[in-house]
Length: 224
Image (cartoon, rainbow, N blue to C red; front, side):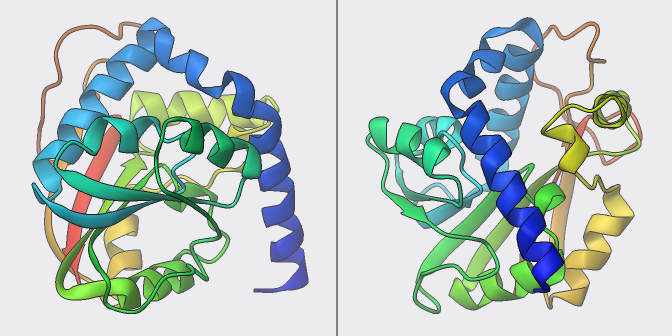
């Protein structure tokens, strides 16, 4: 990683540190409740029912908390402020970056990332590093914001207007995410879309579709 990339990572960590105390309050808004419901249900469909895994870019641990009933989930994040909140939830937490995860090779049943790929300066390098930590039949689940969707267009607009978080994202569509997985040596297995209601009308139960331009987020499952 170049020095300019590291400077960018440091600035991203600073932004998330500053947002950490109030970060979860978004999930109490209509948009946040709807997004959390859809994304959790999508992850439950993709993750193995049991096993040991890592939430890469776990933030405050809000997803890991809901998914840990029959799974052991470790929170990995480079932001001390975010990770302190995950630790307060009683979740095992490790400070670190996706490109150099402090984990033994072939020790995990699964890895998942919720809107984390979008912040990585070297996504293929990060995916390659994570691949080494998976067991031979382990799985990686990417949850990405779909750039082509109404939700993606909203976040891009917020970034253009100077939002401190969304101004630091690089959003992907389905084909671009597949290409990153394949470049990192993963074999894509399945993909679904959710967050099908637009952000100005976030309501209803979670519904799932094949990946398309209307789905606000896409979930892709792959294996080494």
